[in-house]
Each structure stands twice: as structure tokens, then as C-alpha cells.
Image 1 (spheres, rainbow, N blue to C red):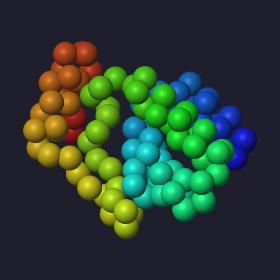
Image 2: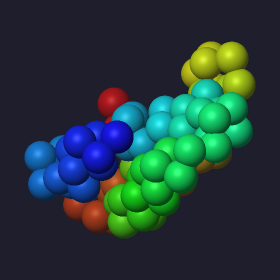
Image 3: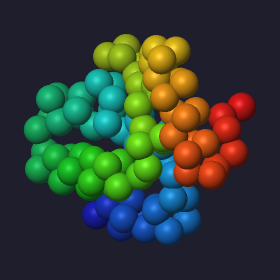
Length: 97
């Protein structure tokens, strides 16, 4: 788990807006499930690091989808899509495809 944390901490350097990985890790099917099942402190530490890096990303990259308890991807509402579109435009980034 220490190696995973080292990689995770370096992730913003190589993939600054790694929202897909963060969304999975923080979803009901990711680290919270493992914490609930096993309760290891290293898992809690990893989730804290994921949350910190997730919150450091621009808002436009957060909250577009998650995974439910069964691992099924769940899209956010269409209103969230347009909110992100506006945020991208305001930031001067290319709009979402």
C-alpha cells in the first residue's frame, strides 16, 4: 500500500486532472467499500490522499459520474454536464465533447 500511495502522490505531476481514477477510488465501490470491509488504516490514509487530490482539481473535472455499490457507473444529471461546460469555457479550456 505504501507503493500505491507514492504513485498516487505523484499522479498530479503526470496526470493533473485524473478525475476518472479519483471518481472510482472514492466511489461506494472503491476505497470506502474496502475500508468498510477490512478497516485497515492504510486504506483510510489512501482515501484521505485521494480526497485531497480530488479537491485540488478544478471544479469542472469533479462529480460527473461515480460508481454504485455494485460497481455500476452512474452518470450525474444533465444540469451537472452544463455546469461543467460553463466552467470549462470560463477557464478558457476546450468544451466537453
